[in-house]
Structures are given as C-alpha cells and as structure tokens.
Length: 209
Ligand SMILES: N[C@@H](CCC(=O)N[C@@H](CS)C(=O)NCC(=O)O)C(=O)O
Image (tube, rainbow, N blue to C red; front, side):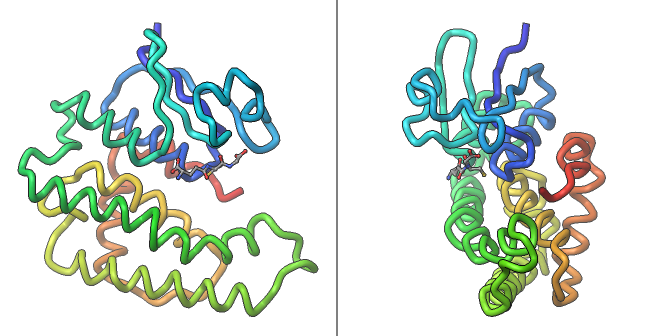
C-alpha cells in the first residue's frame, strides 16, 4: 500500500513540486486527479482536507493531511532525512527556505499573467500589454536567480536540496513559454543539471497546459 496519497491534477505546477519531491525520495504514493476539470475540490470531504479548495493536498494512511505545496515539500524532506533534501545546517536550511518563499511570493506571481495569457486564454482574448509586462517581470526574476547560481551549482549551495524543486518547477514553466527570453548561462546550466536527475524525469516530461 502507498504511504502517501497526493490529491491534484498533474498539470498544476504546485502538484508537480510534490510529485518531484516524492520521486526524489523514492517512496510509493498514489496520485488522485483533482482540481480544474476534475473537480472534487468543492466537495465537503475535500474541503475538510483543504478549506481553500486548492490543490495539492498530501494525505497519509493515518488521516494526517497537509496543504500548501512548499510546506508539503518541506515536510517530506524532513520526514526523509536520508534523501538529503533538507539541509542539516540551520543557515543553509534557512537559505533553502527563503528561495522557496521567493518562488511562491515573487517569481511565480511575476510569471502568472503571461502563463495564463499564452497557455490558458484564447488568442483573441489575450491582452498584449499584460503579456509584455509579465514577460518583463518574469525575466527580471530569472536574472536574480541567474546571479544566485553564478557561484554555486544549486540554489542553496553545493548540493541539490528541497529548494531546487519549487524553483525548478517554476523555471521549467518559464523556459517552456513561447516568449522572448534573455540567455542566462548560470540558470541554464543549473536547469540542465536538474533535468538529468532520475527524480525529475516525470515532472520534466509534463507539457504546459
Ligand atoms: N499556495 C498554494 C497555491 C495552490 C493553488 O493555487 N493551486 C491551484 C493549482 S496550481 C489550484 O488549486 N487551482 C484550482 C484548481 O485547480 O481547481 C500552494 O502552493 O499549494
């Protein structure tokens, strides 16, 4: 039996983070499609797990549930120390934490409009100004990450950690968007390292939708 049940459609970037973390750890899990066209998130049973009606939710066999994707990635990293996902040094861990927070409070909000416009909005309903502003904002965020990666191979230092997962999911999206992008050598080299990881293969194969 699977140790974990993951609720959420895999087209969601926030679900992808958890899929990647579980695959890195190598623990068995079951994923249940929910959210978007799959529905489920408005049912009373689901709202008991997540009152926000959002995906993902992680559920364990004893009834423990957790929502908020980066919190789930941190939880899994802490539960499986042998995975190396949770940095042992408190300062390195805090560093990893802040880049995870940066992903969800700065980088992804900057890209949200251009993603929705170009991937989930019919061409005739798109707003070129919105696309341009969000394209520029997402490039500015990418420059910040590129500078961070200039003198270290991974977001939190010398080793792959939990921080690379949400930031990597965000960058995967940015690199797949049909937009003009600056060439960022450090970011691209880091992303090439991530792409080679066995634990990243399932998520890397998911197309934008
Ligand atoms: N901050 C939350 C955001 C969750 C979120 O916005 N999830 C989106 C998908 S990425 C969602 O549930 N959308 C509604 C739906 O799919 O029905 C997290 O990181 O888990």
